Length: 117
Image (cartoon, rainbow, N blue to C red; front, side):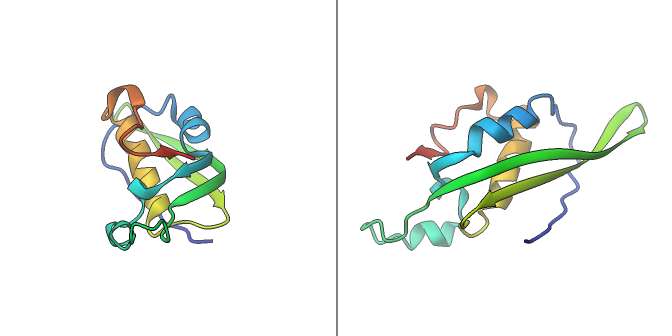
């Protein structure tokens, strides 16, 4: 299990974060948009480089919350489980969630990002 830490310098609206974790990424999807560019480019067109993965568990847990200058600062841990991941897949999935919590990609449309399986 790899552990990484990212200090996000932007204010986030994380009221829906737990729901996003459960509803957006869990299950079987084509995660091609979330793997490293070189992995997508290596696809030879015969689907030999299949990016369909089944994410069995995607959860977040608030480890602690501090107050600084009237703003809450939270430490959050994500737990993501699957039989395998594409290169940089989890990193990019977390980055997408941060974008949602920053108010980017309003409406949470995943159509251009994640494909059903």
